Image (tube, rainbow, N blue to C red; front, side, top):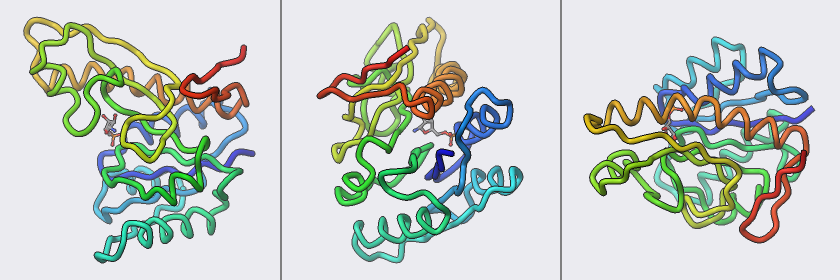
Length: 205
Ligand code: GRF
């Protein structure tokens, strides 16, 4: 059984799509063992509790990034998400991870980003795509490396940018695809079908 830890900060809709995919049997051989948030008021924590999953808030008290991340890591370990064996998912997690944490979980740490990377990394990716004038936008699931939004790409989905789009309508169209793409990537990982060769992620059939 693959133990998954999910790091969140807010709404938790991607967390929910993964929980639903596990509960429906679309993802097999994996369970979400713990959800950790830097914000105690995150809606994502309520979603976790609704699904009877341990939900932990760890507040940043102003120490080093690495110390904070080691507290996160301890919460993951306590719940069976052990580096080198488990899988850690970032799902709307708004803090930048320390190099130490990323290296500890390298190859077993994923993120979802609401753009077609490498275009529009960082904050407000949908707004960046709109104001740049892109005609195609989308979402990316990638392995995490210490540099933000730069790791090997696992899967992507494109969506059209429409003439009358604003940030809200484009974000909603992308989010619908995120809710399909992230469970798909987790399923590939749980089935042992992903391997990384340099920047390329190979998907075996
Ligand atoms: C999503 O758009 C995700 O791509 C980005 O943050 C947002 C999180 O939304 N990283 P939610 O908390 O999963 O609803």
